Length: 282
Ligand SMILES: Cc1cc2nc3c(=O)[nH]c(=O)nc-3n(C[C@H](O)[C@H](O)[C@H](O)COP(=O)(O)O)c2cc1C
Image (cartoon, rainbow, N blue to C red; front, side, top):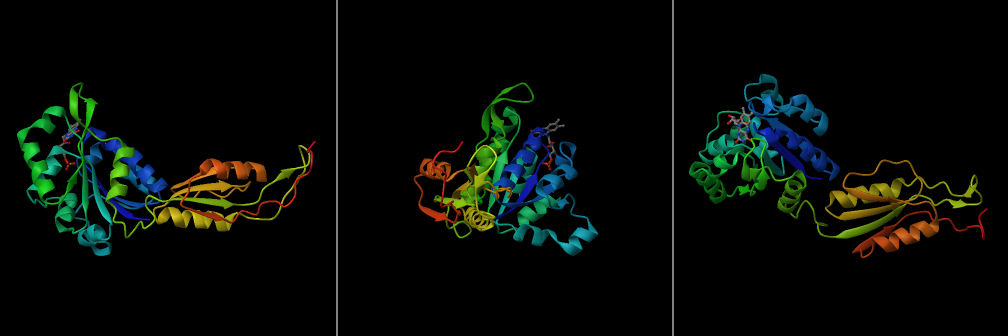
């Protein structure tokens, strides 16, 4: 699991930050949000807090926040700082080293890698000032994603749309240092839980496997960066973040699901597969 500090700027695409938080959480990352003054006109701190399940920071001038989690600590605690959406104004202030709000102050104070996903009107994006700022940010070591091209909220067409949240997630995962995700690029197959072998539509042969061990193994592997397929017998456990779950009932279903999930780099087979099945279930 990595810690992402997400700065949400004041653009119409701020609503897409909500989807990005959901994807990051699903992929097993923790998210802490900073909402700019502009951003708060588009999404509320409450929405970001509910989705991230974390406190949202909105101002530099909060005595309580500064005492408990100062802006320097906020930026240094993260594995990656992501600015999405990054407005033209926010990028201009970043490129020129301003520190006039919480977002720019912690961006100036951080030595953590920074990924920027811009979103703005096509003319704003193509303006020489913005292009200068983007070039400066890139020269300073900031990764600035290319915006998407297409129809915009303002009715114009061209480059400037926020890259879609799954693309931002992919850029984030690529940027996280391998030290945090030593299994990145690996596919691991995990089986968990019991199987149920029907006798008739009501009765079945089963065992008392809880599935907990396999689910814990799958979650830990996903947190280390692996792509995990979890083939689960009939249990009601929640799917660990970032894990693809395939539900099965019988041993034959499980064998088929395992075969379908191949190839895999490794497999952890902790399911309690039933030893018996009736010759012909009614
Ligand atoms: C309705 C509306 C939509 C806006 N959308 C954008 C946008 O998509 N991109 C952008 O760079 N600025 C946009 N702006 C301008 C920014 O909100 C403004 O520059 C603000 O100061 C940015 O502050 P922040 O980047 O600190 O959040 C918009 C303004 C309004 C009123």
